[in-house]
Image 1: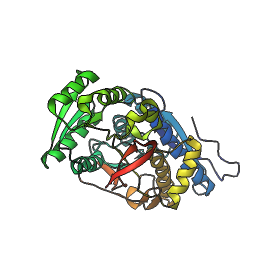
Image 2 (image 1 turned 90 degrees about the vertical axis):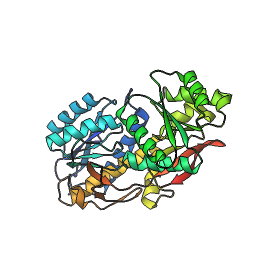
Image 3 (image 1 turned 90 degrees about the horizontal axis):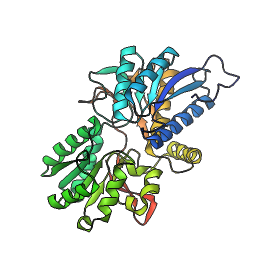
Image 4 (image 1 turned 135 degrees about the vertical axis):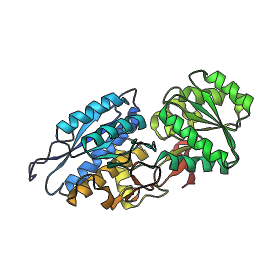
Length: 362
């Protein structure tokens, strides 16, 4: 899959960027669709402004389907096709595989939307990331829980490097402030058993560290239907309720569930214009993931236009849809990092499930 062919007036061959996104199951395909929409809009804007020194920018798109091995094969294929950089990806485990393969090939990679702190095992000069590190965003989420009076937290979790890292971040942050985190293993407990454990433990909140749509949707329905848990907060820090599929599956049951998203309380003129165009293209409200896609292309185009290599992250200073983008080295993060995009804790309004309420900003 590629973007539309270059315009006939171009002054040379296209500048190719390899774009990676989960576009089919078991990947989170809706997130991948939003990411790709942002990337493609970014490319259209770059080309409308003259491209890269008169040469059009072109995306070569590959579907990772949340499969690290498939993503590694795509990196090899794209490198052979002569891309100048890689962009995108949503799933942290897949982004780790992409980053490792790209670093091994010396191919710059700008990660759009995968938050795992340890994106690479060793410091990587050719890899950068737009989205905040998991430790940054999830600590803000934990602060929201504490401010709302929740100190006895349960996490309903599946085996995953990403979920395990999130659990550790929450436990360390809450424990230092008098809170506790209990793990409920979804490989051993069905939704009814999770409800029994929540009632027995007296947890005031349960966080869904689980796949979407299942088992997350079934867990929400079970907790909502259990009268013993009427006062228990359901949370989803990974952002499942951001997407339209969540509202379509769960309706009112899916509201009032706080999640993380990475956008400011108010968009500037660029962000507002991009939001309107993304909304038209997607046929609905764009998620923060779509903005990450657009900003990814804006960064890469700026670096390429400046004459530097597409991995010269230290010199980036770009107006993005959600603020000024600059990269730096952050302690504990192995790649070049935008520190930090705006972070919100948001939920769907129970009175209007199509409306989002900002509960906390960080």
